[in-house]
Length: 115
Image (cartoon, rainbow, N blue to C red; front, top):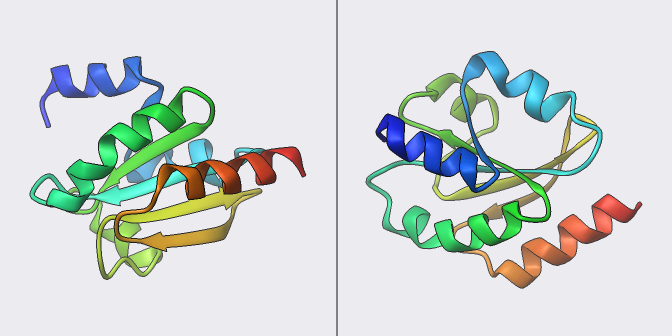
């Protein structure tokens, strides 16, 4: 991913995470945070990008590249990608493997934000 790609993601309210900012942006966040574990070579991961961009308009959405952050991937038992985790108050409250419909993710994020 190029520096220009990173700027584009930030402009779309998506945040690329690394080990150093994961705690602050995800574990210490009060509301729900959707985290996408992905890799550049993964076709299904790329297929999820439009969904993630749409969700990022209304919710906090972060991306973790499993190739550049293997310790984070190991910590959350990432064995297949895309892996989408929803965190709330520092805990994983939902886990989705593979392509997941936007409606499913949006419904869970909305419910978690309201409770």
